[in-house]
Length: 397
Image 1: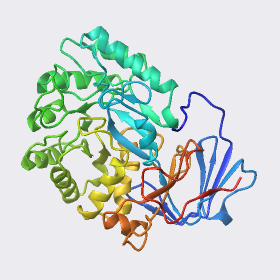
Image 2 (image 1 turned 180 degrees about the horizontal axis):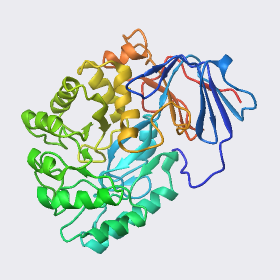
Image 3 (image 1 turned 135 degrees about the horizontal axis):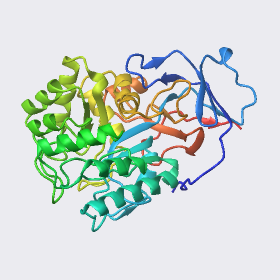
Image 4 (image 1 turned 60 degrees about the vertical axis):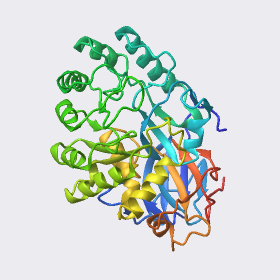
């Protein structure tokens, strides 16, 4: 198991050379003509050809050995509790397993699985602030878990959101998992949250846990949350006609998750394509959940949307990197100067029918992960969860 990270010194200068394919995370330009990335103290400093960038004085040099470098994957929808433990499945080490699936950042949609989760307003705020503080100070495996997402309850007023924001809370848990389920109530609280810099997500579809409710398109559109959470259901999806209305009726993020209805997810992707709004598509796992923990859930969604969804693989990777980073206001998800040096090194899985990594993903195969870096530090080498890659990078010094 990867060790947890609390606080550490700067990573210094890091050079990644001999990159075979560089995926940028940017939907407008998903592939970069570059073979070298330089990072300094956890931030990308330069991207280009080896002859054009300063690679001298590196504290750490990684020879990519012709493998593919992409931004670390972002899971837009998880339900953490504390540390690397989930009571939902009574499992330890689940975040470390996601790291082995290339995930470097997770975004909480509410710490709903805490046994005895408080539902009074004081308790709701206390849990959110505690979770935010906990994961800010303690990163399992180095993964950035953005937690502290209160599930809103009836009776909350604007001062509650102001208090949460002042304490550092930046997210709301899924609207609909608590007592607030009506569109007009949710709309008011979403507006208060937005006013104080807190981003909101709304549950979509049938109930997922006791206490949650059925949230249809009318409630979602009236609430106007920033993210249409699991538009393909978690687990039960809305009728496809309603999903079409949601995609057409607002400009908010379209979140497609692993623990949802695959047909509905593919339909949402198809509508986003028709609207020429693929930049709104982001990916999550919606886990841990009754379905379990899915360490390779984001990779599986990329392969599904590329193969069955007939989307170029380099674009599908953007859904889980740059798209999410832009819509979630993160400093990661893009291979660009100034962004976080969070990287995943991949290659075509051994014996895949694909001619290269993009073709293999387009054919539905998962790539093999050879290394993951967070903030310029190597967190894992060859993944214990993905199929073995044909080539893996090597730390030179």
